[in-house]
Image 1 (tube, helix red, strand yellow):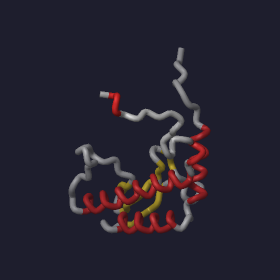
Image 2 (tube, rainbow, N blue to C red):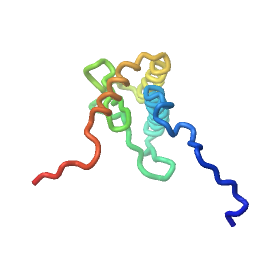
Image 3 (cartoon, rainbow, N blue to C red):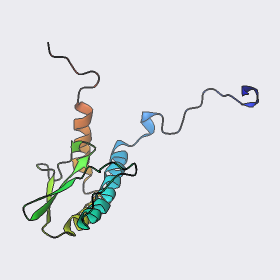
Length: 138
């Protein structure tokens, strides 16, 4: 079966080498994709439904309501993005549609580069974390 295949050596997949990856660009793409999903989820929540992922699991939401106000947490994966250097939480507003409007505003700010500094800081914090096995307590 393998006789008709042309095996080659010395070829690497595109984007396989870390030197070809733009960390900030990759992080911004990840954040943007998440915010687009969160904006869609906020519309589902506004209609009284529970947003789910394509595989049917309940979606983890980055927005929540306390009292009469909706809030959004800025995240890069599980890490906080301190948008103003101090906080990762934005007050979106009291109305149902305020969350979607705020995510739309955030996406425009992201596209203009206004969040590059906070995202770079978050990336630096992620890189500084210890890697490998967790130390066991004895």
